[in-house]
Image 1 (cartoon, rainbow, N blue to C red):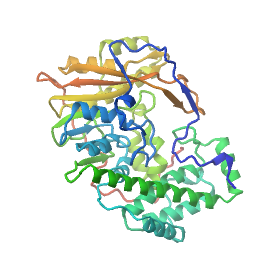
Image 2: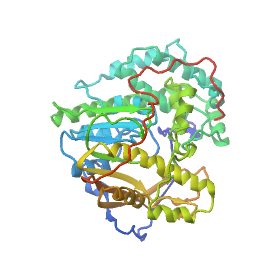
Image 3: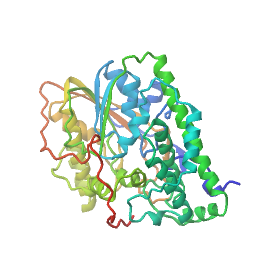
Image 4: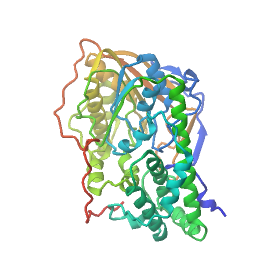
Length: 469
């Protein structure tokens, strides 16, 4: 018997409002109206191959990345993405026989990419996966996240079973099969928790508490096992599809994808000159990706100290170390009457520009910088991010090439939270800049890396600090 309050919706951030965006909305001055889904008809599913293995807020859709790769790079080129998120640029670069360098503040990138860019030529066997899943169900190992408030988020019975399953994963060999199960466990561990499914951040709700309570009266462990099995099998088949695709498209000399999660893109050294930048910075009012994925990070073995250190570097909690000024940005700043919103605006553009500038400094002459952003509203004021970035970088010698406007056909919103812009953004924009011989990008003082992907993680602490969330 299925619980109607917890129907199988295997996403980390399920959402409940979807509507058509009015077609009569005007476009932004100077933008060319396009549909990237129409321009890239060969991709008819945004979750094709390995793109859907991990859920992640505000994903970069592959059609936009593919268009930028096809239009502004050639085979063998190096692409840099300082806001890598769920690694869409890395996957598309690999599939298009390009090379990619990915950076992101979130340590989750280091766990995402080994599956999303699966470079083996051997297909995986479902029988081997089933054998490992059976071993997990019979395991006597235990793993409890180094998270002082873990019990706040789980019913004791569910926490006990999840800690058993994670204990098996953390004590078994790190193979592709165990990594496949790990990806499924991430989704299941969030789904069978008290956190509200309708918001991206961790938040308990009466609805979810009631849903878990009702589920506990049923065959919840069977449903948990079914979900882990179903997701694991789906991921394995996606990896096999990835193998077939690369074999059919002659990937004897495939590209390289380098990735480093847990680093500050404003200061991390880009190791080589690059032929293009393709990226999508965080949204102006939705940048707390560490907090949105902290449950996953804890189950993966990261500590409260690590997560807190990274969270402090997210835009809402980080002061601007310089004030970015452009004609459009100054006008927006003048219209804002609240000091907290002015500080948020200054922080956003300071650290977004710092990260872009750090990577764009390594672009080759005439290389394209492809930056995908929205035009959000802050306190009722539209902020044309693409125009502000264009003004800033053109003043420093980059050439403005064009800006594409992609009208959002449908918009899904988190219905369980207050939203000052309930209709969402109507369009998103792909800004194209070219690096010229007269470019001047200021060099920022270097800071130490937060967590190098190749470094061993710190040992878990026995007495973590309290975390109210």
